[in-house]
Amino acid sequence: MTRVLMVIAPEIFRDEEYAQPLRVLEARGAAVETASTRPGPCRGKLGMTAEATLSVGDAIAEEYRAIVFVGGAGAQVFFDDPAAHALARAAHALGRVVAAICIAPSVLARAGLLDGVRATAFPTQRDDLLAHGALWSDGPVEVHGSLITANGPDAARDFGLAIGDALGLP
Image 1 (cartoon, one colour):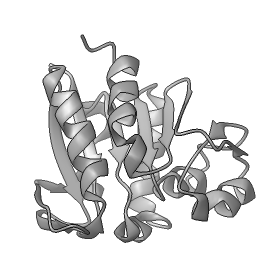
Image 2 (image 1 turned 90 degrees about the vertical axis):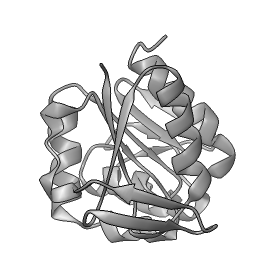
Image 3 (image 1 turned 45 degrees about the vertical axis):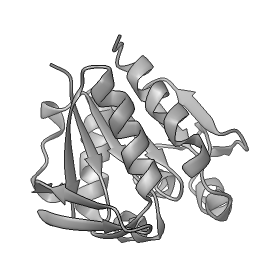
């Protein structure tokens, strides 16, 4: 079974950016787990609750075929988080899918994964991505090898589909 780890903020993650890719990936046969800064309940901007079963620091990249960073204002907690950067880098080094939506592509940019990569994010992150070497795109979803970025809630379903496609899920 294809295992996917979705990383959400403990507070103010973007509900649609978590729920829609989750639905798509599970419908295509993936087993999805959720991580945050700590195990336990997490609350979305629009009131959704999700249960993180582990902390980002305890996640092991080798155990997952994809690591997905979910956006929303709370995702800033991972921008400069050493554990989030280490997880993203380790997954990328293994050739795993590493994906981020909304403001979360800044996590990948600050981890050094988007240097020279065509990427998108919520427009507020444009300067941050450019400062870390990304090639900015205004598109809703960008796929560059095993790196996938998306620009916000309206792209959430297509983001999930792109991840499923990259994983070769039916």
